[in-house]
Each structure stands twice: as C-alpha cells, then as structure tokens.
Length: 133
Image (cartoon, rainbow, N blue to C red):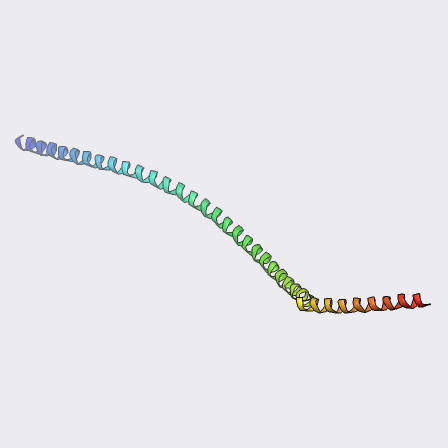
C-alpha cells in the first residue's frame, strides 16, 4: 500500500507538473494568438497601403504620360515657331534690302530739286514764248 501511495503521490506530482506545463503552453499559445492577431492587423494595413501605392503609381504613370504628350506637343509648337521666325527674318532681310537709306533719300531729293528747277525754267520759257507771240 505504501508503494502504491508513493506511486500515487508521484503520479499526482507528475500530473501537477503536467498541468503547470499545460498552463504554460496555454499561456504561450494565447500570447502567440495575440501576436498572430497583431501580425494579421499589420498585414491588413500593409495590404491597404500597397493597394493605395499601386493606385498612386497608376495615377502618377498617367500623369507622366500626359506630361510627355504635352512636351511633344510643345516641341512641335516650338519647331513651328522657330520655322516662322526664320521665315520672318528672311522677310525682314528682304524688306531691309529694299529700303532706301538716308543717303538714297538725300540723292532722290537732290534729283527732285534739280528736276523741279528745270521744270520751272521750262515753264518760264513757255510763258515768255507765249507772251512774245
């Protein structure tokens, strides 16, 4: 009986030790579950941020494409403007080449004065000839 009692005491002690170990395991499992919940929440947050980043990336890509298209259009307009400026420069050079200088105008005035003087003399001669008749 004593041996059985000792065996029973040993079994009780073993059972108590197992209960404590089971309690520790339960605590660790609870702690692990809490950490898993936290990790799941963090993962959900990360997934949400990732979706948002993907959307932002898509919007940014569309904006970059629009800017690139706008740039191409602006370059085309600039090229057209440069071509027009070149044409205008040519036209201005032609006009400038056709313009009379101050010297040219002075010579024209001198010729005009000379011609007016001759016309006046001829008219005077005609008047005198008419008077003599």
